[in-house]
Picture 1 (cartoon, rainbow, N blue to C red):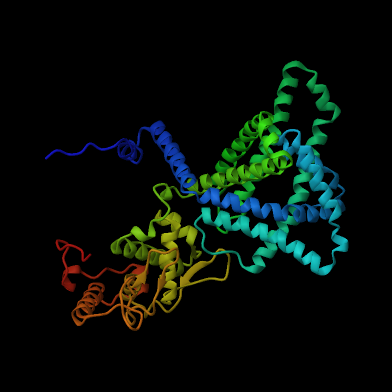
Picture 2: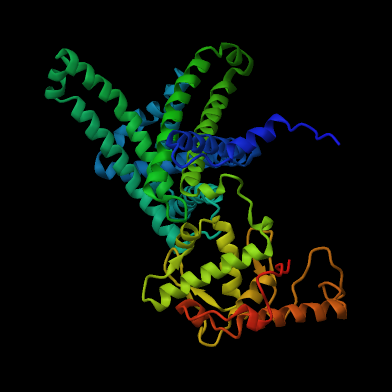
Length: 478
């Protein structure tokens, strides 16, 4: 019987995910970059990033003028409000001669919107529009980072307010300092010295790029509601900053040759080009966030949705690892573990860890702390909770959605299966099936020998499998 030849995509995938030799460092780095590019391209092709970018364009159009009005009022107190117009012109420079037109219209809108005469209700609505933009941005980044827990209302107010108030001041202050430095007599004299002047000129061109990279790095590290390490955030910031500048050059060339579109759309051409530029800008920002995510979580490079594909045995093993880590930290007087700590320690995707922690939390075996991000401690006396109870909780949990949900206390309520029919809303259980499940529960309880979670975490000798009626030669129960 002949075997059908494998296609090019299959062979490429086999080559891409084949582990290179440990001593081949260059091959390993090159393969890592290819995998990263493949994962980002897969995210882009799936359409989620483009949909998020389009959604942010709409929200930005609604919140841009209120945001600038609030920033203008704040910056006016620091005497740097006159830099808003040059900043907007620089940001919209790829639009060519239309940049000045759009900047003038935005500044006119801001001047017409006087915060002092809006009244309390008007100011609240103004502030709500700005806060909704910040929440939309956070939601987009949380989606990229697979974060399901959002900031609380108090945290949003604190974090968003700090960005709205402090952010513009820092941005325009740094711009003013940079411009003042390059305008000093000392720098002007350096420009007259041949090679030194050339280096200073190059540095002057690189400073705006470096500031964009720094801004993107800050956004990637601060906005997602999870702990983002500096190096992954910097990697995303560097790539996004370079893409931003390259995109600006390309878009400026496109605008310069788009006279036919101006003739077709007439007065609508300028706002259309403005919205396209906003869309491309948000898309670049989200692409950089995706790069930062994959740099911090390379275990997601093969795919983001892995919780539903895990076997029961894999779920149980990961749950045991998580319980062991939580118990060792608790009884060893070490800091409690967060989701990020467990993800890094176990080298498994974040959503898998969150699924299992939700299961164990709903069963009362562990409990999150009030700090942000939450850390996990024993939720009940582990001297009384058995390892069999934890395994039953994982076995009876529902998986496949973004959040795991257990249907009740493990060992007492039955799991509801999709597609099953029953007058009570669950599946129709037959006596022989119930007897088989009870037999499996008895085998698990006997295998653990009544071991408690504290005994499991503190490391006594594990029960002999042969004494529990098991041996290594038998196959695992599926």
